[in-house]
Image (cartoon, rainbow, N blue to C red):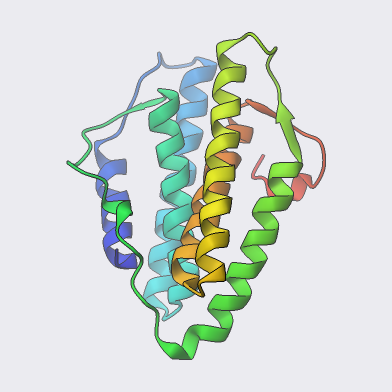
Length: 191
């Protein structure tokens, strides 16, 4: 998927989103936070894209997508989703002039996601629904960390960066929504 198409899709989905909680409740506030962060990453992605920085545009688009998909899956947000999953297609190849920056950022984001995953623990009691969802978020972050590592080994840096960004977006949204306690590296999260 082209980065600008990903950003367009993200903007369209944000535009159709509704919050599934009564106003002035903690759930509403958490849903608002998810939308605010998704909008911020979509906006940052566009700024990077327009300024000729496709590496950071790619990372922002996928990070924002992770936040948005967290919000949908957790039930904070309702929206009309397009048929099929547009994220199943590989990312577009970036120009060779960005190869060094892309590789450096991809390897750094792998380390950041791995560190972030090791820096949280589920906040809920084991038998609660929130703990079950926390474990799902950890599973998704681990799944995208593993997929990103496979892409990295195959030197498909664009897809690897997308995976690491997306997985970290999920985890960051989970922390912001109160599903996790931060045990270390507080600076890796937006709370």
